[in-house]
Image (cartoon, rainbow, N blue to C red):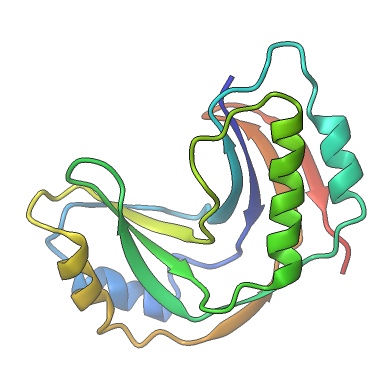
Length: 174
């Protein structure tokens, strides 16, 4: 079963910098993320049948503090054939958040789960489908956006089946 653990990021599709980004990329085939923004802490390509991961996540997340992250950068990376991901990120990831991510990923590994992708702190904003675009061109355009720096406390974590139901929800401590 494929599943993932995410921490929600309460940004808005209507934020002025996000509108500016979309306007600069008008005419480019992009599937914009709408109304559901998060950082994937771990994507499980495989979890063993019959293993309930929620109790162990309870142990880790029930005592975890909500991280405060300052988002200050827009960027892009390649993700497969003719596809790039436009994302929001930070230039200074908090050590406590990175430690929490590592704890969760170590737990999943200990239970026999398989994760092909390493952790990359990013909030997906859009997936570029346009074969005329590449990462270099995207970065040039993205660099024109008047990106403000803003800080958020992130306190909602959700464990979900990929394209399916929620298996667990947590509210991290302030």
